[in-house]
Amino acid sequence: MGLFDALFRSSEILGIAEETLEFALESSEASHPDEYMGFLRGTEANKLGVDQDGLVITDILVVPGTETNSVSATVKTSQIPNDVKALGSIHSHPNGVIRPSSADLETFGRGSVHVIIGAPYRRTDWKAFDSQGKPTQLNVIDVDLPETEDFFDFTQADIDDELRR
Image (cartoon, rainbow, N blue to C red; front, side):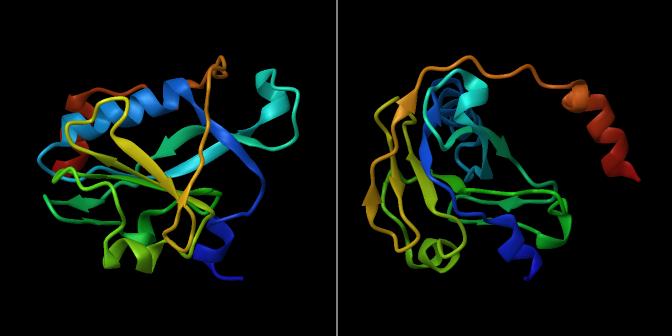
């Protein structure tokens, strides 16, 4: 099993957490006019108080070194942590078109759900697709997300220092 295959595990996805979707919409708008890109990660539903088996998308991993512009986003696969188990991908289309491009379809084979968010990034400006690029239902679930560790406790100055190295 290759690294990319290990990244993408198949399990029943019940939906995306409301707070995670809001984060993605805000991040997409903040990245405009460039694309926003990340990998979807999930939490077992029963750990979130949902009385069902399956996963709820609760996290978006943005890989360091991802290069974006107004028409594409390129992930440096060498920068993906070995322990990442992604359920699929999420990215924005600054042109507002909420359907997969041919380049998108080439990457959709990995993972079971792929979300595209279109400008102007309102609550209704997104759709989910399966690995074949066909529209699929992705419920928005209102759950309390688990507290995260202080892993992302850094400032812009910390990032600037790291980039100068």
